Amino acid sequence: MSRLSEVFEVGGLTVAALSDGAPDRPLGGFFHGVDPADWTAALGITDAETPVPFNFGTFLIRGDGRTTLIDTGMGVPAREMGIPGGGELLLRLAELGVARDEVDTIVQTHLHPDHCAWNTDGDADGAITFPNATVYVARAELEHWNGSDLDGDDRAGVARRKTGPYGDAGRLEPTDGEFAVTDSLTMIPTPGHTPGHCSVLLASGGEHLVILGDAAHHPVHLEHHDWIPGVDLDPAESTRSRGKIAALAVEKDALVTGGQFPILTLGRVRAVEGGYRWEGA
Picture 1 (cartoon, one colour):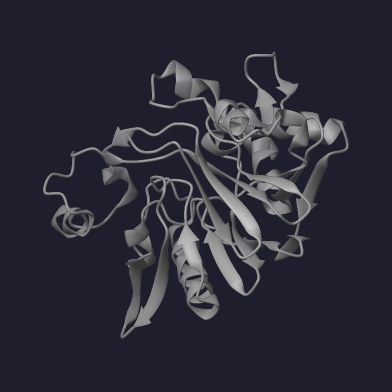
Picture 2: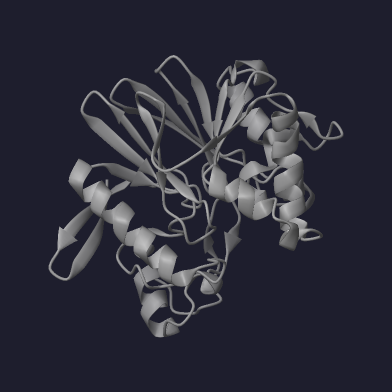
């Protein structure tokens, strides 16, 4: 089983990569329109149905005067599905000595169910899990999932249930464009996976970290921007966003990681002739 937590430093920030479920699963659904011989070779497997390590990950950021969660995992459904480490985010936080009421900031890369589930406590009838937290999420993301055309949609229902209580409490902050949550944490629009999907750029002491959300589901996506996950709503937009975030990572010489990458996956993106190369750190 993949590791369920790992702590590392970015300048003066302490970053904890935390899993809310770490299954092995086949990734064919993340490489639509690509010859399996190409993407399986890139992943180091020979059979497209071979399960590989996957993660439903979140990140805890401390050191800038805030206690921030980037996404809140898959929640109780991961536990009910028997996923290793599933639904254990609160346990991971407790292992770090972080109580629920210490989390004061939640940054949502997007509002798919595996990224926002612990905003409310599935074991406590939808009560707010982090009573002192303000949730930051792109306005375009909120408008998408709250649109009347998605009334009755299961995923929209989750997004609404997981953000609504914070809105009722005056703790929901819609964002537009690039948005600095703190001096060291900026939300970067990377739409395509969902209309308001954002990645996160951390900056401290001259060092940088890019947290991808679902702009990439595997490091190989940063080399092949047009290998389209079947879950991306707008393939053309998601392709552009992978190019945008790869260019930013090169510009900042940033470490890069993602919530779906096994813990701990860190690397850098290098510009090469004709594109980009992932280089593990």
